[in-house]
Image 1: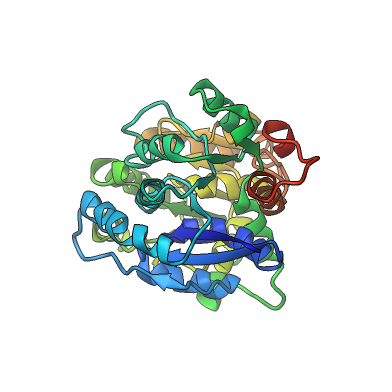
Image 2: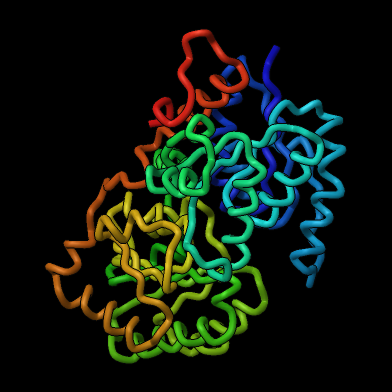
Length: 384
């Protein structure tokens, strides 16, 4: 009898990172995936579901305008537990550190359903940054039965927190699997507006959306972009805007007058990956982009003071620059004007987040835990 794996996701990044695992589960007769979306990113999920062929069995539709995080999490917990029981789910799988992931893990644990955590063990050491992600990921660790750590560093964080080694598998990150799937789609080209705007120009991709970035930090980054536009007229910026009204207000109010800046809606994932691939460099506060850009050889300046993904910084392909305008302008200028510094960060194919085989590694860990064979080893050695 197939193991029924309930995969709960609600945001675009979660959908991207669970997609390779869903595709792998779909092709293995030992498993039966049950897809449940909370709708935390309602409009942004449709494109990812379509791109990867994901067909959710249930959509909780829990989002309302202006809703508090606590209200949203409460609704997920209240509605998901019974649904998991009705679907006779054998194990619930959550991804990352979103409020959806925490609430789903808690709901499953309350119903005594085992929890597997994809992308486990990331830590900044500061509960307030990123917020609420650092809190969510720590709580999920306490609820999970099986931990898929993307790197050895993440696994070590879990061991320090006294998670048993038999419950940890180092798998790599499924975002690398997803990136390769998106890049290899036949006949998929970048949209015309984006291509014509960036063609022949040094282009910087900027993404910024985290809650701790709202307000003054985001305004400081916009000021740095404005200064770079004034001092470097040939430079182009592409800034896909998160749907949150606060994010849009800050960037639109400060950067709309600049012809060098393209403020646009969130891009299709395939366009986004192609843009990273063709960009001169990336400015971001996103965790996923810190993982994707190094694989494509695009330097990353991280608009944060600390990161839960230190592997890229240690490898030299990412650098923490914070949100001080002078520091951002200085670091961008250093890379644009100093070929040696740029090439030192441009390391295509670097595999500090895995080699694109995380999904089958996760599948093997699920099999060994809940569909064991007599000779199957357990724990860290099996995942490495």
